[in-house]
Amino acid sequence: MPLRPDPERARAALAALDAVREVAATGEDDVLACLVVTGEPAAQRVLDDWLDQVADTLRALGETADELALALAGHQGAVGADPSGPAAADRQVTPLPGRAHPAREGGR
Image (cartoon, rainbow, N blue to C red; front, top):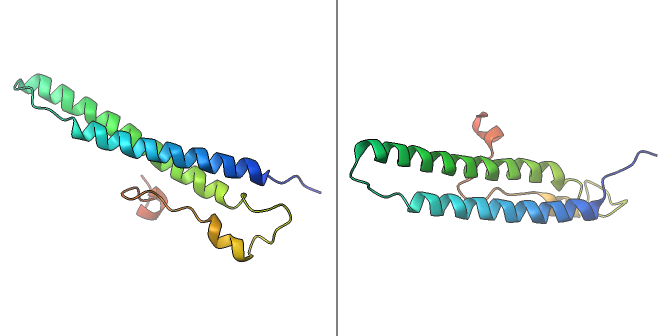
């Protein structure tokens, strides 16, 4: 009999991924909210580029957490439960608002 993923660990991992997604989304919003005008064109360009890279990194982290959550969602059911049963709808993971799944957008 093949081993199956532990549903309890899958649920714990999904909870952790939800927290990562929330922190990444909040962090991205906070970074974008702190854009300032320096008055110096060269310094402004460096600052804007750096903040954009930080926001892009946080966005990518959230998207990766979405992808991992989708992959784990099918493993959080009860041991021996029918994977197509009524609990199947509960295992669907919805990306956070503003975080479309890259596979649905044609990739990166």
